[in-house]
Image (cartoon, rainbow, N blue to C red; front, side, top):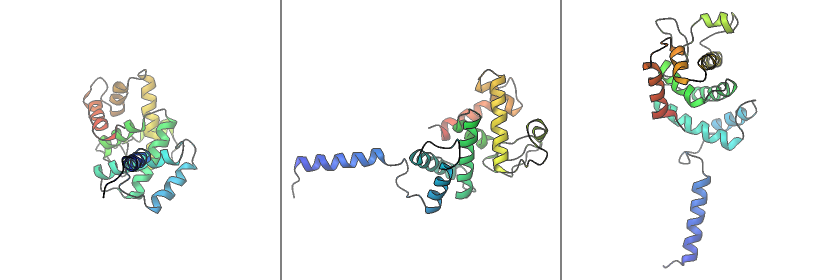
Length: 194
């Protein structure tokens, strides 16, 4: 059966239109739970511009996070990503940098505890509760921890005149050295950059 050039072009045009407008991860249809969580995120201030933006970013980052940290459930992945996006925006940070920092600090374990006493996803030291929080704040709570971590990184960025390398070194307590910022940049470039 021979097809006319007009039909072939029409079919090709429709295919390209679908490919261009499809979400990044069109292979996997989002679950009902995922769609409900996206709708919930759209109702929160400082979240996403629209549903398409939310679905594309959350789905893409969720797939990346699942590969990097398979121990994190779908619900927790979504919650981490939603909180990172919101808190990074509020602190004027790039959410991809925050994801890279979390990977280096805790590999997305919100119960991580370092030998120095740093806690949670962003490995926040307990003294920060006295500095910027309230005595009742729980640094193992994902929302609290991500808010603290983003606030701290933002403070260091201001102190370092927006020099991310220096701010990351301060965040880690390795001021003047580049080994830690380089680890974060490596994670950013290999897994989290858009």
